[in-house]
Amino acid sequence: QVLLVESGGGLVQPGGSLRLSCAASGFTFSNSHMSWYRQAPGKERELVAFISATLSTNYADSVKGRFTISRDNSENTVYLQMNSLKPEDTAVYYCHARLVTPWRTLDAWGQGTLVTVSA
Image (cartoon, rainbow, N blue to C red; front, side, top):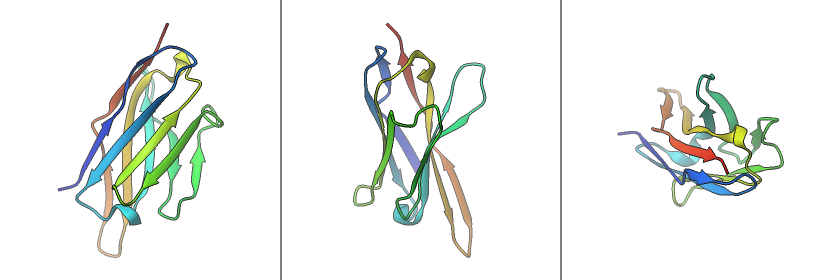
């Protein structure tokens, strides 16, 4: 069973930091591309950060220089370090996994973790 479980969300003041974690199971994590998305109230879900199976990364312009995505294949976990948080970063953050093999394509989502940036 494919499972992605996010943790680490919460309430933080502007300028603060949080680290999100996403624990994966049920598939070959090391071969998968992992992403963090977010969805703010009344807005569409947007891609925040991406890390490939070969460790290349990409970020939305709005978070470049503030957020860092990383992965630990020994722990089957992907992280999102968020610094210098702004109120506009408030959203539900979702972990996403994509794995393409000759036999199937996996697209899996976690349940989301809420990040609220407010004084």
